[in-house]
Image (cartoon, rainbow, N blue to C red; front, side, top):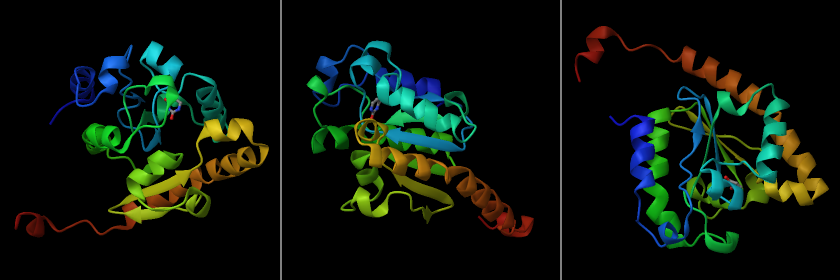
Length: 200
Ligand code: URA
């Protein structure tokens, strides 16, 4: 099994799509290796491309504020994007680019196995809920395979629209509750008997 650092090295050599030609730095993601909550944004912007770190521009500052509102900080969670390289002029990522990058996010989630996956914005939501609409499913949790998937609006969208700002702030405040529910659910699952384990 790869470590996160080994995975970052692989991602930094990636040339699976055209975005590799335009990037200054790859932005694989960052945060705690044992993070219980993973936030997945869309794609790096200019600041992220320069620094090789996710959410370090204006949207990132707002994400920090949102994390502080639930007594969390970026060092205690994990933050990454669907796309690891900046699309030129911050255009939307193409379906081909999203598909090319998909394996990296899958590997990250395999390594982290978080309790909660928070999707930020439409592209991240679509990765887990294809065909859904963010206005319909934001702030509602979905449980799959012991993981809670929780779609939220993108912090950048909320920067320009006061109404969305209030919605994203309210959705964020539900995360501690979801976390404690997920702890209870997982502790309540019956441990398999040792004899049963040896059957496999
Ligand atoms: N927006 C994103 O979706 N990701 C970043 O890393 C920065 C801005």
